[in-house]
Image (cartoon, rainbow, N blue to C red):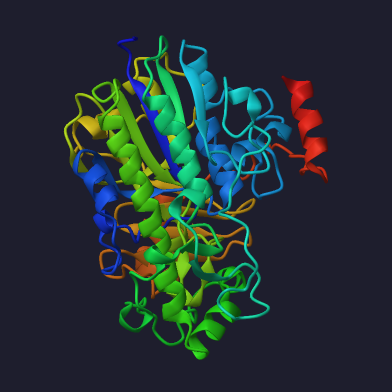
Length: 453
């Protein structure tokens, strides 16, 4: 068995910072995530590079900014970008250094699984699942809400696709392996629709569920672009029809189901031959609004859509909590350094190993999130600065305004703050990759990818 550390890379879909160890929601029940946090460095201010699935995952797995690859939406495969076509992804880098790269569940966006990244994948690399079991909705009785649906399923945990993904990973962990491994386990239950087996659902009572504190006229000082992006129609309907608490309770139930699966993974690893030689990384692809700023879903540059849970547990690294702002883009160079693999000069993130070794050390690098070309948010420890493609701005002081109620961008005395944060924005004059959008039909994507391999 190799002495080089293995990697267990656990990804969650649409999971925000309601998890217990971040303390954002008082009703969250996540003992196993908390257990992992106790043995990890907790990155309290971790942020995605894009607040939707495909661009976020493409950025993390390539180590490149969305503004570099041109991957901005869910219909743009990384490999259809001039920059991304021949990039070396995170699992490819491990494969090139003698690791076996495998796993189960969703780690890339479901339509674009990137089979060249893997030695093997379960299910096959063109059949990755990204939802729970099929069902006939709406379970919540609300018509014309799209996939904003939730409810209890009268099935066992074993029938959920996330449970099966964990089964696959546990079977792999039980065995000895000649090569070190990069093993992914993708979990999707927190992705709409929010359906769980009934026992998880019944742990949470809407009547006693804590709702986000949302003031009247929460969007009055938000830029026109921000107001346009806000999904206020869904919020107002849920609020006015008295279903807001039902939805939040169901989301918390999904977090509890996901936490149960995390417990199975942690127990399986502890009982395996790899217990003492495995780096564990836990991350979510982006955050989620449940009424904050009168918005539902993701797809904004505000705190709720961009902040994500992120934990790293590694042999020789003491547990701790780090309040420095970091990005998911930083995981790629971090894992290379943790595992003693050669660094790559083409990566745009920065290794977090110095923060793993000393979570309180100085760190002058903010986190950058992009949503569509020219729309960016810069998050420092204190400030969130947003500049939209039309030049409009938002600025929030998190020391005084954690929920981002007051846009301070128009205050003259804060011009220097904005100027300093703006130095981290991408160069608007730099050339952009043009990405061909996903052709209709899975077969077209399959043929194109096979021609690249």
